[in-house]
Amino acid sequence: MKDKIDALVALKKEIKNEISNSFFFGEIERRSCKGWFGTDPIIFVSLNPSTSTFPTEADKFYYYTLEEFGFANPHLSDLFKDIMTGKEFDAFENDSLKFHEAFEKGLRWLHREIEILGGNTKLIAVGGKTFDLLKKVFDNKQLYPDFLRHYSWACRWNKKDQFRESLMDVKRWIDGTKKAI
Figure (cartoon, rainbow, N blue to C red):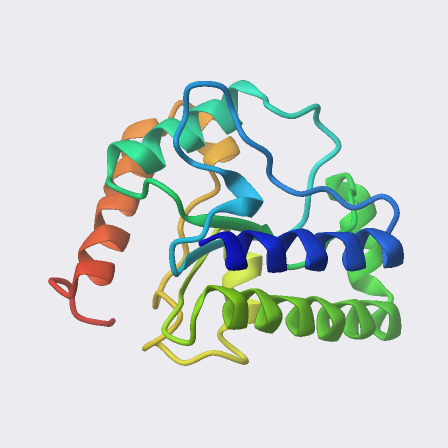
C-alpha cells in the first residue's frame, strides 16, 4: 500500500506542477475514506473540482455514505483537475480545442491512477457528464454502466435516499450481484 501512496503523491505533484489551481479530495476527520489517497481498486470519478471550500456538508455526506456502503478506502478523483464554477466549465466545454486537450490530459492521468491502483480497477462516474465522457473510452466491465448522481445534488435537493439507492446498485455491481445494463 505504501508503494501506491508514494506513486499517488508523485502523480499529485506532477499534476500540481501542470495545473496550479488543481484540487485533490482530502481526508475528513474520523472517516476511513482517504479521498485522492484511497488505494482500493475503485475510483469514483467526478467531473471537476468546484470552488467550494473542502470539506462541505455534501463532502461529509459523500464520505460517510461511501463508508456506510462498504467503500472504506476508494480512490476519489476528478476527470478534469482544474477548479471551476459550473459557468466556467460550460464556457470551457464550448471551446472544443481546449476541452479536447484537457480531456486527453485528464484521461492520461486517470490511466495513471488506474495503473497505480491495479489493472482491474473499477470506475464509477459521478454525474451524467462524467459518464458520457468516460463511456467513450471504457467498457462496462471497467466502467459502471450508469452514472451515480452527484452527492452535492443529493444534498442540495434533499435526495439523499435516492443517492443511497444508486450507491447500493454500484455496490451490487462491484460485488458481482448486479448485471451490467
